[in-house]
Image (cartoon, rainbow, N blue to C red; front, side, top):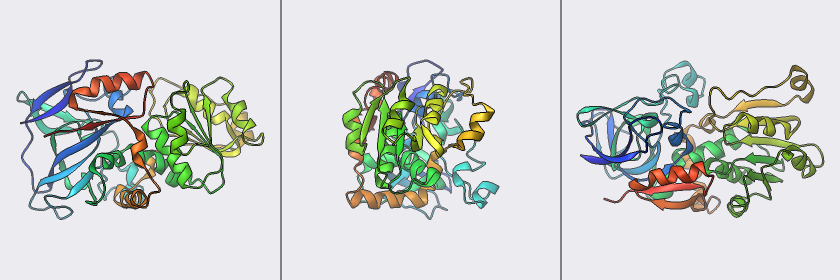
Length: 361
């Protein structure tokens, strides 16, 4: 029996419950979770944006120590530190064969697969195949990425989603070049990671945007050169900071049609607008045929930062150890398993960046 944060339905506050883990199969790994980040996608599981199955163990951004491995596991052994990978590619589908594991057919639509665990004897589902808000979990071998023992386990958890997504959007999806101008709208954990990615890429002007002024210090610490409050005239303000052209790149990290439209309008002719936030299916963004032709902009989304965790996590750890990437600036609150509901309240209010669950044993 282990403790986990369980949601039992839409708009129902999650609770810490005792759950029964499944036995470790030949290809499975049991992980003692050390830390987990509270991501907006976790909130999307219960606020109507996504439609998971319930009851659901929340959490998908986590790291921990391997406690047990199945007979066929070769990737890790007990005692190893690992990051959980919520988009664990199968390696066999067409997309994986094209070198696009973030689009893997086995992952697509896997919002809440069965965890194999049980709650009061009934079936229990895992948020994005992980269910990381738990003292322990059992996952397939492909869902764990080795983490060097020298890397801190608490901050390592952030590599499982926010950092891979934000920095990956800059590096892999948009391929920002040195000296280019970048706009980032929305400064939660993923937005601030995107700012960090722009700084690592050597971007010149980095404009960070959020509601009010609370996030300004966080944004500048992450690497922003300018901070603007969200405003209907944002596109005009961005052009004023980019010699009248607009930004070379804009990243929308909230997932709202209105902000996608603003990001698009803030990009120069021939520039690129990348949607990183996950939005609702009934929130439509519109573009007219003439502007699509005239502005020659590229509009795309970034799924999981177009990342391959087995490739990208070790690179990010190297940058952490070299002092080029300080993930501690992303963490504004440290909580226990019983603090998730309050973390969601802060998220709804746009307060802070990442709430990090530290799981005591």
